[in-house]
Length: 616
Image (cartoon, rainbow, N blue to C red; front, side, top):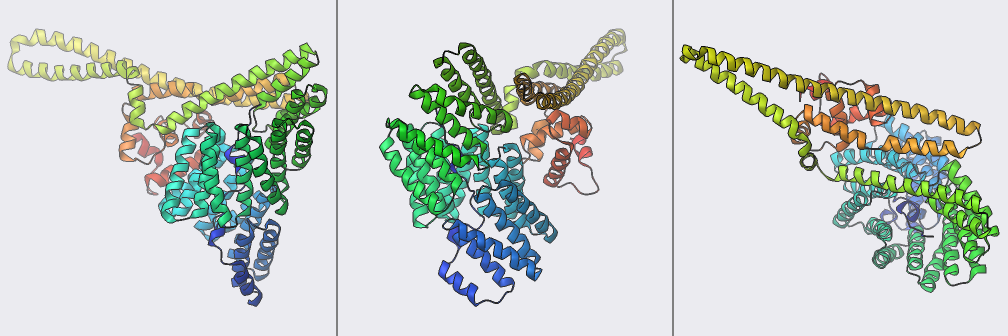
């Protein structure tokens, strides 16, 4: 079984807005804290103490975060309360308490909004995005980060811009858009080197390591990881030392250098126990089991893998638990004891069907199929193999869709226009004929004035040109009708699929998770994400509204591809509901997108976005 290290699992924690290198010496902070009365300054010192211990003593940092919030409430200090909510959210996220983290973050975001504290809002949105990413909600995470990126660029917040690039890289990596992720990482690294932030630079190097693993460049990944590890050790950043040691150990496993792997993994395990981070301990124990299996120490290896499963069952990380369950099943397959591995495969399948972990679902069906085949349960083995094929094909199609989306993001409008140039030939010829027809009318009109003798001949030509012009106009009108029909069909198709999906989910629940409904839902999900319909729509749109995209990019060069889509649909004067169905997002999402577009285009309160777009 192939194990791939992702940015999200490689980095359990995102860099804080106040990373540990910004803190004063811990003893100095404690001295100031002990001498201060209970005032607003002490609330700030408690925050500094939290950040000073966040990566070296997680348990103690939680006590400082709680004390900060408690004191701010006692003083009725709103800014301190908002900061306290934020630090409590960060602490809960570090401890794997995602639901509690989001509750605190939302309280912080609401209070920062009332206080009109932009920096607090930026940091909290980024933190919320990190939690959404950990839960597998990558599009939501990217949307939060993208909104922050625009505002931080406007504010000139270099460190914040780099941090947001880093966060977006992690989400794009999980979506399979590796080129976009790589570009965001390079952007972050370039900024960190200019502003001399060694720990944040280490975070970006660490993320580069994860991408190199995906590209199977393990030797290069180890070089990046060791450079990051040296920085973390120099700054006593124990949390990221632990995760980096785990990553290096995992890469040595992929290189089949199992002895080297054990050295790094054991060092990481010691730190995870010192920091009392059970979730990370479970992940490292899983990798230790894999390394031991590689050394043919099967009894020790399986014991570690089982221990990992028990530790991760209590954490809110279904993807990591899924990986450990699959690893136990595979280990038993490798020593020809399929009966002992089947319960773990079965639990992994149940987890896949209920919580949808982000792991490779196809592999667990393949592993269970092999176990059943060894047990001579051929019918069940064939059934699992078919399910494996369905999921494997779905992954292939999903990767294909991601590649299309990636190209759409990378290439600008001019490049796309070149790619569809052949498709525009027909409409270009029609417009050329129309221009020639108008020119001929002018020339013939002049001929009537100059020579009455040509009256009859000119009249006949004008009649032919009128017929030709009417034909061109009719063809253009047909194209417009075809465009509108295609747009409305796309909207209706997405609306029907969403309703069908909801109904299938209801039926699935009422019939105890029938696999047929599960497969139907996956099919609908794929069809909803299919970009072919949008590509066809874009072709029709460009034929009717010639050079619309290029005019937009020339007037507003910062407009994104998604904003171009929205402007195209506004150009057609469609309703918000129709636009929402076409783009497959909520009407509330459309409202937010319109608001951000108004802000980017700098439209005054007296003008409307619709009128501006239609006039272009």
